[in-house]
Structures are given as structure tokens and as C-alpha cells.
Length: 99
Image (cartoon, rainbow, N blue to C red; front, side):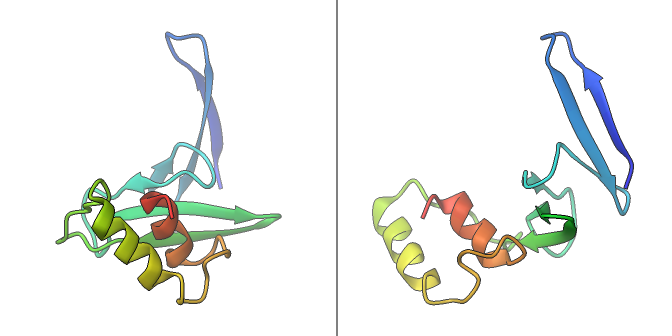
């Protein structure tokens, strides 16, 4: 996996990772996918293990700013396994919703 760094105008060093033709801003940082089967992708890393995780329905809008919908989603998704596993789509989806 090529890892490269660049310094931008703000003087901060930014690290990027290329994986399967996609460029990620780093490990465990979700990005929007321009096209594909899912809305987001993240290059998850636990220790030395790395896995590409895709999540989110590209045809649905996220309405996490509406308290009732957020509460309902968080309650519904808490019963699905993988709530604390970085290699599961449920973990990243719940993180996006701030559950």
C-alpha cells in the first residue's frame, strides 16, 4: 500500500493512502465514493490488519439532524452485531450518525 505525504499551504503535513485505485486521507477516515454500490468507503485499520469497508445506501439521504429519526436509527442499529468492530459497516454507519 503506497503511503505518501504532502504539505499544503496551511503548513500542515497531510498523509494519504492509496488502496485498490482509491486515495484515502488516512486510515479510519471515511470518504464519499464518487460512484459504486455504496455511499461511503473507509480504509479500516486494526493493528497490522487493513480492510476496505463500504457502507451507506447511495439512493437514500441521511437525515441525522432530525432527532426522532436519529433516535430511531440508533436504537434499530444497536442490535446488529459489529457495533464495536472497525471492520464492520455497522460501526462506521453508527459513527456517521453519532450514535
